[in-house]
Length: 278
Image (cartoon, rainbow, N blue to C red; front, side):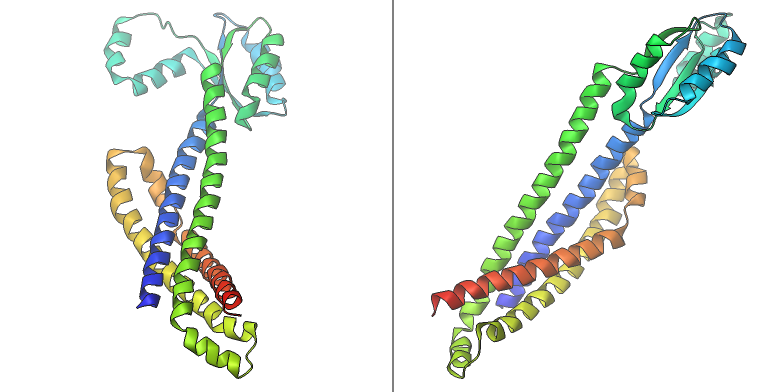
């Protein structure tokens, strides 16, 4: 009965860990997607010199070590992009004879934290062709700081969660050790060492970890394929995340954490009981 209770407790803890991993992957995917879409937009002067832009400005910006790509968006390209993003404007553009949108350069950087530095450098070397440069400024910086804090806090919460799980599991295994105290006393009377007494409980902890990890994986798989995919129908950004989560990656982590929790819990609980009864 106590073993069943231990399996239920460890499985519940591991399911919570699995759901935490799923949520963390989802949040990280959203953050990464946003970061990957961050770009610098350099609006070009009307009547800019195409030759200077092609042969001087674009190659110069492309050679920045922080820059991943530079793309020229013409006035026509900008109009078509806007019509796709806002279909209601199709009628407006059909009435307007002259395209009011400027041409621009779209610059993607290798890491989001270099946006400000690249923007400042471009402003100093903008030449006559570039009228204005923007990348979102304070909004982008605030988001990047928030995403960094999220990653740090996620790691902290995960560590606290694992420690709390080990404490609960150790307390559960401790009860099973107490229930077999008579057996332990007999083993001591025949000369068994503490490690000889601990090993069965350590192996039991490994068994509990494997079983609980497998059950937790099945539960997380059910939630992923049921709840998560159902939510992705309403929230489109979750679709790629739900499909991209590798359940086998979560599986081995849950089983490994379960085994480690079982081993650590067994060692702490048996050591505590044996030291009390000496």
